[in-house]
Image (cartoon, rainbow, N blue to C red):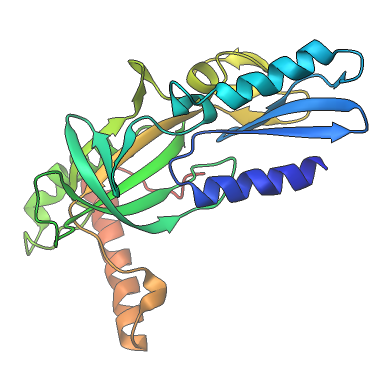
Length: 264
């Protein structure tokens, strides 16, 4: 039953790209448990008998039923993504952007859960989508991607043969998502320090059976982007893409002194 509930939670995250967490319930005969799924994993309440603790049972579902009356964030929706009519707006730093079509989404519960959208400035041409917004949940122990890209761009600028074709993605702006004036992370902002024993507030969450990593909600706006590599039109284009990637990776490592890895 727990696995089935996790599958449903993953589907909810996949269908609602702005979802920060999802509640769930399991009822085994008369034993009820409440679950919270987020980007670090899940935590659950102790089970209780709904026939002997009727008040708690009613209170739980009454609270869930009215939870979104004042603010949908209490059900896990991202308050920094707002809907006006059929248009979605998202704030990154001090700028507000209009969200376009979702072009990529990693349908997972625990992990970076990277999501990318086409975007434009609020006052931009409605027929043009010049930016890509990347939304992800990085490990608290990792450096944010935005400052690294800006540093690499500055270090590599003198080696660019064509200024219109930089060696790295061109970052417009970046930000750590703020909820009520606090960085949006799993342990402090979502779980409110409930659940597994915390061994290090900046690094990890420790449960009885697995180690869960605290994650921070980050966004970056990119001015340059390309097609997914699997959309190559012929073998020559694929080989040239691999050649350029290796060439620029070596330049990146040599001159910016930043070593790139595939983060979890």
